[in-house]
Image (cartoon, rainbow, N blue to C red):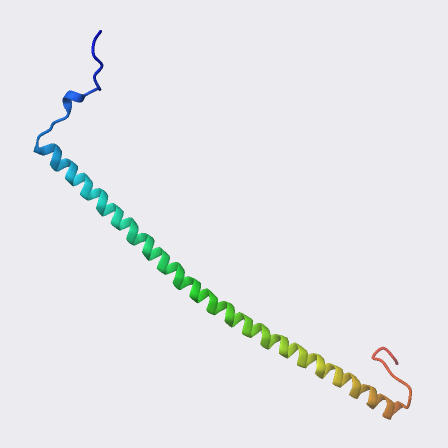
Length: 104
């Protein structure tokens, strides 16, 4: 029986050219790894910065909503006051009789 050999085992060169090629390949791999690490760190920083800005926007919207709620409460109070004043005016002008917009 013949002995099994890996394909192209004879094609491998063991001279300095192979070693230099491997060194260049490893350097390229290390540089690509550093580039990936830097890109990941940049993205993490951008997201953190964006999250901080997002929290500021949320706080701003909450303040605006609170102001709007306060304005609505004030308008409701003013409306109730106006309704009460209209009732008083109607009692003064018409006695116990009330009028509506649809009355002739």
